[in-house]
Length: 97
Length: 507
Image (cartoon, rainbow over all chains, first blue to last red):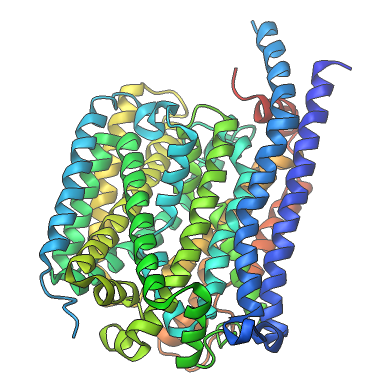
């Protein structure tokens, strides 16, 4: 496998991870919005003796999910992407005129 | 009784300290700003942590601080819907945009779209999108600044607009991106610290967040349940699309990725930004509920019917005039910083895209470009002040929505397609950007917000308040169809080299 093909595969892997994580964020966010639109009573259901509602808990979870997903992505790139990329970059720069 | 609107000595002292410190930084930055690369991208020497804070600073506008705290205090749970919406665009930027953008571009997002396409048509369309977003966002910020400062400091509207425009001009003109970045960082830390201290005071008063929510529900029984904000699912999804993909198309945010050394740093900086902004919105939620419990909705609306003064009134109730002054100064500093970032991205579109690549066709002297950039900055500052004064007393809240709708429809689809699809063509890119921008403008003009509320017609032509659900898919569809109708062999040939550079960066 030449470097060009190796890079193509590595880039494709990054896009796959990126698309999966983006999809998770989109589903979580629009799920939250649609729950409020279509299931208002559920979202307004009280918890913890009336001090909390289902909607607040889910909304706070969607907020927390955003940094968690970006954290997962940074962790993935640190572990599986950057080193392989650095190697390919080094070989390209050696070849460079 | 509130002292909001009286001349507040603490507020003036705090604000003068902020302006003095930032002007000293500007002086320091000015000696490092002798090249275009320093002026627009801080020479690529900003660290991930610094850029993370600066991104957060660019994004946490006075509108999101005062507006969301106000919305939560007035309508409880519904405010959370906005907080969530403002945040969810950030992971999308991290996953899809930050790294390829950093590797492919230099100063603007047009660099990326135009990379393997014909420069002039793409640059004209992309610069128009940038300038439209920047103008609407600037109008909203300037009018907000005038009103806020008048309300909080007792300074006249025009004096406030001219002060903001003048100080911002000093930052950008002399200190370029280095000064703007440090203004953003200082402002982000001040805003976050102010909000956290205020939230801590609320919780000391009330107990824990659960006790706070309970107290809010005891006072306003529907505070924890969804209210009237999301009554129409189509409308809600439409707003969601604009918020999510609009964030990923904001030129002043995208520009910040060029200030770091490489793509890995760009990626880490968005991670920090996402965390900081997430914490900020959770804190704002506490502030909103705190204001409704401690200050009360009736008092908040008596000062400002829109509820925007909830956080300042809360600060006064818990920390007296001194703390009110601190929060007022933070809000002023916030507007100043956001306006500086917007102006810099507008100047980049004018001098790098339009002057450098359209008028000069990519052949120019570096020193000339820097000079053009500085003239552009002065021009934009004057236009911002003029627009701020022209729109005095107008309801411009819809303009932030309009800026996001244009960013989501004109900028984001073309940017994403140019990075991912081999078959994308010059004609496709231009058609997508022009369609996205005009459809967003036309639909918002015909919407209930403008057609009925502003222009006084009885019925809206288009029932949607936010056009995202139509304009975002439309911009994608037009870009794809026009590209398929007439393939561009040169653009396809260039795709492999662009892909390689998107991953590996420039040599």
